[in-house]
Image 1 (cartoon, rainbow, N blue to C red):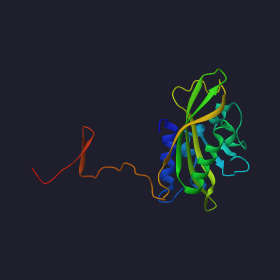
Image 2 (cartoon, one colour; image 1 turned 180 degrees about the horizontal axis):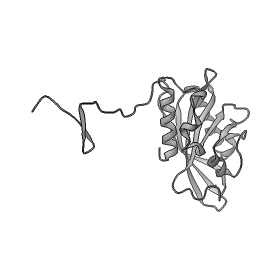
Image 3 (cartoon, rainbow, N blue to C red; image 1 turned 180 degrees about the vertical axis):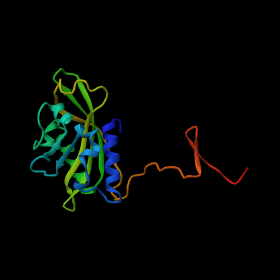
Image 4 (spheres, rainbow, N blue to C red; image 1 turned 90 degrees about the horizontal axis):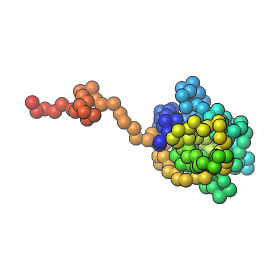
Length: 193
């Protein structure tokens, strides 16, 4: 994950889910993710309606120059990428696995803009196929956001996060109290003097 917003949102989601496949929608506190809230969104898993936005952060809306609430997520993608976008959403919803993806959209000035997208399952009413939490953030310098509006997005790459087992993803753990850090290595005192 390249962008601070996607890394922070993933870590928060991972902590909130614990040993479950996905955290409950009620477990997500907007105040706890306020630094990345502008880049986040929540989607409804509704194939007929094109997976509409339930909530969209201000910067996500600024990317496209309009309010996205109730807008179809799949309509943001170019026609050749819509089926793949639908497939990714279906996989996230049915397998309870996150997805990180690279996307590109051409702005009105003709300059391609790179974005990073994160899609994560949310449990809602005991099911993980109703809501998804996500982030969409520009990579590199984002001074153009709000000045230049993006056209349809192209999906550049994607990878799955975790295995859908309900087990938390591996993460670093603090060193044991008997350990000390030296030159970025953790040193455990042994029995030799």
